[in-house]
Amino acid sequence: TRPRIVVTRWIPEQAMDVLRDVGDVWAPDPDRALPAEELHRVLAGADAAVVTLSERVDAAFADAAGARLKIVANVAVGYDNADVPALLDRGIVFTNTPGVLTDATADLAFGLLLAVTRRLGEGERLLRSRTPWSFHLGFMLGTGLQGKTLGIVGLGQIGRAMARRALAFGMDIVYTGRRRAPVDVEESLRARYLPHDELLRTADVVSLHCPLTPQTRHLIDADALAAMKPSAFLINTTRGPVVDEAALARALRDGVIAGAGLDVFEREPEVHPGLLELDNVALAPHLGSATVETRTAMAVLAARNVAAVLRGGEPLTPVKE
Ligand code: GLV
Ligand code: GLV
Image (cartoon, rainbow, N blue to C red; front, top):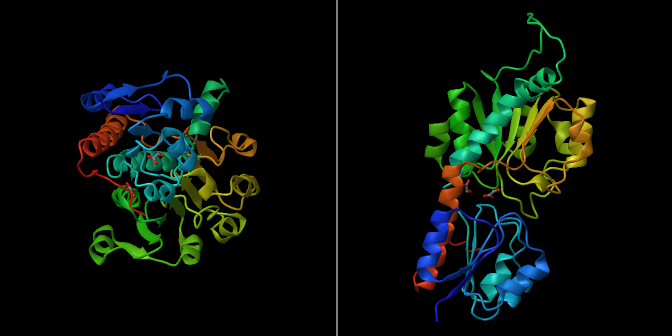
């Protein structure tokens, strides 16, 4: 019998074609997230599952699929939605999609940085509200980036791509993280390592590019925000819970920092109501990897991981921890 492959959310057709080559594919109604109970029912007897960050992948997920489950392919680079040890303990391969969304995510992070420092959202809201305005030299002044210091938290692939963009804009780069980057990476990005606290005190922009883990949950809390310069901006395109969102809303309201650009939220799809009332925050609904090209590449990579494993080969991008 052909393997049964369960796809939990809509994925691009090119990826579906890769999956149909190796098995019978069950795919959902594109407009609807499956409630966990229904998801567990359709998983029964699956040999493979393709999931997104909206699905919790844990022991109950594996048990719902049963003993045939060989691989779960996450269509995302971040995998805080998965209990990876629970899968590996059962001999199930788990894969993510590193590399293919690096540029798209860094582009969006830089876009949010420009949006908040140049007040683009605020300006658009002004025009759409049909408020009278006229050009003058003091009108809606923002903050320039040239000569300012970008502090990158997590100099992985996306952090490095952000640094390259910032270099092109004439910014200086400092970074922090669990470990130092190789010397050639530091040199090519002209990036200087700083301890976390010193980076917060020094940077004009702090951009988060670390994964969400127990160690990074609320990494940016009220104390971290207080350590930042009152003129500094915070950019978050990784995962919402890396920031204490209530503390951030207070800090933005009280002028503890100057502004923020946020693509991710602590309780998506909810956004802290305090943030929605502020003009000094640029908001996007988790669009980091949301280009046609990138989403196709992510889904095709996930599908190729499934195809490789169902054919008895090695996955392309396994998560091993
Ligand atoms: C998206 O948020 C991802 O982790 O790929
Ligand atoms: C992985 O860490 C990435 O940044 O793409």
